[in-house]
Length: 166
Image (cartoon, rainbow, N blue to C red; front, top):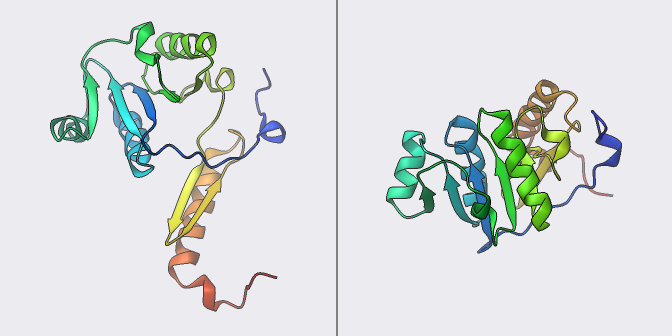
């Protein structure tokens, strides 16, 4: 697998409303992934023996289903999309392998990300606009900086900057 597959990336915007998505892991990265999936109105299942206080709260409010235990192969059954977000590379790889056998799109947030099916770009939302920025995994810091500049530009009223569509 190529270390920097940016030339091979096919950008899409997934429609996940009312579709089953699984996040494996319960730390801050998993929390961000869960929040993004909830913003897309996905049905989110969290699999982790532990979770952040926000994830606890979301489970308590029945906004997510929390399987409070370690990952098991059948946790991905019926999922449309899976994100492996643990701090254990062997668990993340196992999640990717289970999804690959079942034909489920999966991603990992650690060094095994090239073995997955997708990477998550930095996302900037403003009104009806959604802008995704990715470097194909080669420069996350630059992506974050560019997303911040885009966020600022849109908030400052890009519509009035004279940069019209054309």
